[in-house]
Image 1 (cartoon, one colour):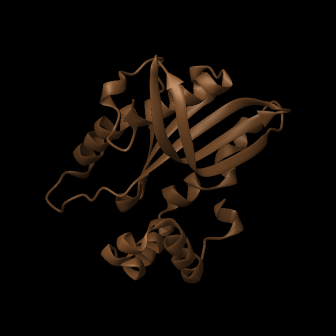
Image 2: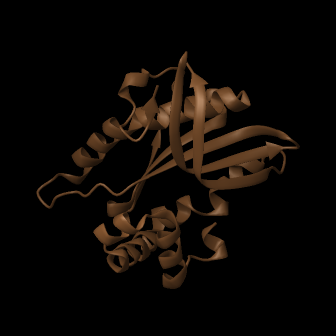
Length: 184
């Protein structure tokens, strides 16, 4: 949660070292990446998406236990196919031991060009990334028996500091999911 504080430069360097191979680290500029991460967190919409306060409405009529996870791995049979991927951020709301609410947040670093119309670019990003979010949402709905009204799908466009809600639909063609998701 953002209220618990953002990781400092040293912690971000440790995370990069732990999550990347030496070959990968040699190909990225970690100090530049760390600076960019700090700028992303300055955006009010991005900060709000990482906040406990975002889930206040989930606590009505009853207080729920919230669980947040990052890089939640998926390997699940869904719609007669095997789906493998990773949810950037997943928030689950528990009533006792039962999950009664969920949200999938997908962070994207797509860059808008100066010549692009921002709203048209955002609409294009929604078209591009919605299938992946809907697929992950479908897997969570299946895992926890959630209805569409118990699940939120959120696209976080970091480069422009925008957070976009994606409508949950009952089915989504698996072939439209992004290349980060493997449908086997």
